[in-house]
Length: 301
Ligand SMILES: NC(=O)c1ccc[n+]([C@@H]2O[C@H](COP(=O)([O-])OP(=O)(O)OC[C@H]3O[C@@H](n4cnc5c(N)ncnc54)[C@H](O)[C@@H]3O)[C@@H](O)[C@H]2O)c1
Image (cartoon, rainbow, N blue to C red; front, side, top):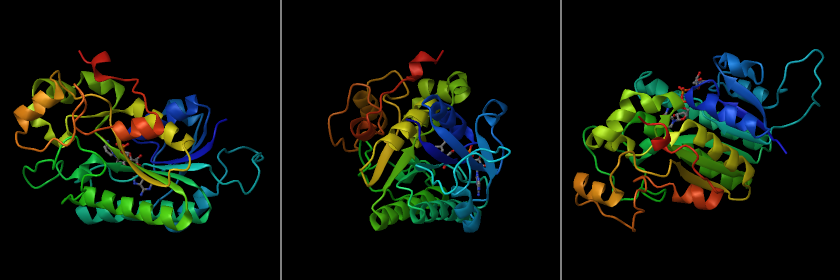
């Protein structure tokens, strides 16, 4: 049966695709964002205009009806089955660092606190593979080892990734306090369907030596939808961190050969699959049952 799910930041790049996927699985969605959804989704999902750094607005919104009707038809007092929190600044330098930190940490704190106090037992939080510290380092920094798994120390130096680490710690603490399931998705570079034919993906394939920052890995926006659905359905795991990454490396080489050529000397901690992505998705496959549907080679020309 479909769940009642609040999505924050659903009007953004990832959110649109995640919401489409969740609707296809039969879920009922309420979107909390500052801007509207694209036209094709507006008739199917209501967007409440919410400033998530304002805790009063967040509490009020989590107790809201999901649909506007005259009169209202939904029972009063329903709480959502799950919250998927995507909203925030999605990289550095959209805003000054202080604003990035303030918005990302406060919005995440407000959502986790309000959802926990309202007894919502499933919260999914968007973090980022930038927490591994390479993407926005000052200058070239190496990954500590390969494959990059969730147990690797997350010690970034940039404000955006530090804000994500802070969100992860809030999630861990509240999951412990409330005995709830809070799953963190460390999301790779999100690729929307049209982007496989654009310059960035071409560069992934043709000049891979330039793409340490993305870990020679990506997440298809629709496969990210599947991961969110699986995370909503799988109960009882408590606090968890999952790399949200597709299966394979973003060029045509064997992974071990490629890493030996590009990053000689970086420790390899286990045998790599022939074309396994250097940032590993093994945990989300094993614990949530993720099965990739959108391999990049299906769309790349
Ligand atoms: N885009 C990527 O490649 C990528 C990679 C890793 C992680 N992520 C993370 O995934 C999430 C979604 O990323 P995206 O690319 O869809 O971002 P996006 O910028 O396209 O969308 C973010 C949405 O959040 C909303 N928002 C921002 N601040 C808000 C506030 N204070 N109150 C209410 N709404 C607010 C925006 O209006 C926007 O619709 C983010 O948390 C981002 O950090 C993205």
